[in-house]
Image 1 (cartoon, rainbow, N blue to C red):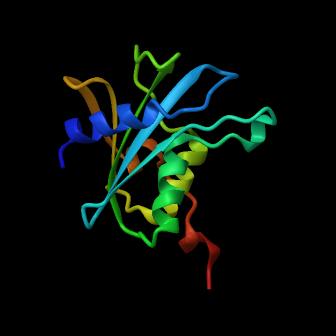
Image 2 (cartoon, helix red, strand yellow):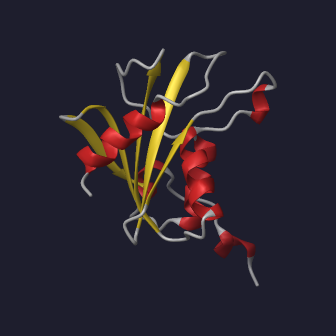
Length: 136
């Protein structure tokens, strides 16, 4: 599975987005180390704090299905479903990913199939807080 394939799946996931308040639709495709893929979209709520991002929707779905090892995610998004710029994971999603993903976990953000940037979790969340900080 390459980044273009993940990008296409993230686009499909974005079509299921429920974003009546921001009108900013987001889709994500999460690749497990065993090759399984879980898609997610953002799901807004009138009580804004209940809103869930596409990345966490994909991650939580994977975890609920027994997955615990991940290698990459692709995130796309845009106003009214039109991608005009890169859609980076928010800080909460980066922290959620850090619970299950290694620092070299790949994060792809794309504008189109030919314009996909690659980062690692370490790039986007340096000095993260993880279970090692909790002590014995």
